Structure formats: C-alpha cells, structure tokens
Length: 94
Image (tube, rainbow, N blue to C red):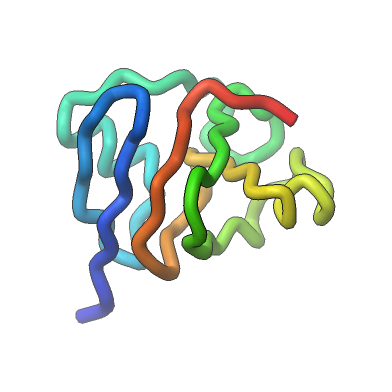
C-alpha cells in the first residue's frame, strides 16, 4: 500500500485524500467534485490546473504541457498523481 496525499482545491474549498497511484481527477470525481476534463490521457489540456503552493505531481504520462509549464506549476489532473501534499487552482491554463 502506498502513500496518500492531501490535495486542496482552492476555488472549491475542498481537500481530498489522493493515493499516490490514483489521478487527482479520479479521486475528485469520487468525492463529487465536477472538474473539467475531456481526454483523460494528458493530451488535450482541458483538465489543466495550477499548483498554488509547493507540492509535486507525477505527470510523466502527459504530453500537453511543456517542461517549462510543469516547472511553472501547471498540472494535468486527469493523469497527475500526487507525490506530496499540494494546493491547486482548477480551471487554469498556461
């Protein structure tokens, strides 16, 4: 069994517990949040969010974001798996 991290959705004022092996979007949906998405494969960018504070996200499966955009804190929630606690602002695009 792996780690579980707190992901806070700033605009929604909701914090969810996300296991390291699950995507942020999957758990958000399980908790009743309605976040934007389309492809679920990290290629369209509809699910893009931005990290507000620190935190690390594994999104190696995605192809939409450039490395510089990832460094700037952008996250694809459909494929992003937390590697630490984080705060994100949904509906953010680079």
